[in-house]
Length: 322
Ligand code: SER
Image (cartoon, rainbow, N blue to C red; front, side):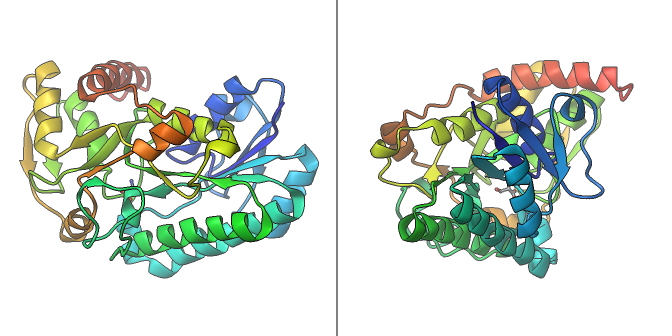
């Protein structure tokens, strides 16, 4: 049995991961932690406990941990990369003050912690192709600065205090459930919505802008598998490169057109997003994750697109949005 607190449970990853964890650990408590204004609804609300939990409020996280006997925290609260450029102090506050409050509670109560890192933790000096696990991390975005600091602080708490911290560097994540907000990779989700709604898509990144992308089911499985991994096999902890597809906008567009033939897209690059995307890798090497905990992605571009289109169509027509 596991008792888990998901902080940021109504966000892009949290809304799906919380449900997946409830299925994976049916005997335990999987608490959906949310902030005011982002309360859980529907299945997420009804399928288990939820608690207001601002990631910066260590006392509150401590109380929830005691109430449910929490042994693992998934700390998913974050301001994504494009918004972080506009609100750098808020991004610092949520990412860093949030992390330290989680780690302090974890240290005191013996809780394991997953705080994701990202392709955003790399920068223009990083080898862009087959980006190694251990390499230069000198990001030029505020998001990236906080993600490198997240990796370092998480490792520090492991080495210094024995806190069981582990994580992955997520690619841009694609899903049909909850929209991301304020990220550089968001176009890869929005493009599917435009295609299904029969709208022209205005792409905020230029053709040829490669970055790692991943379908959400793979990302959810990675989040669970890393926390289940045998610790004696882990030579790394924070954070593992995980990869599945290296995509640029034209590839996504042409793949979607195979299934939605009339779909149209034009390019209108957003300077902030383009600069961020240009500083990120094209394709990470995830061989350490494969060797140390058996990671392997399942979805490729075609399998993802078939599933995305079918599920998004069903969702939008159920919501009366088509
Ligand atoms: N998907 C995030 C973003 O675009 C990166 O981790 O900001």
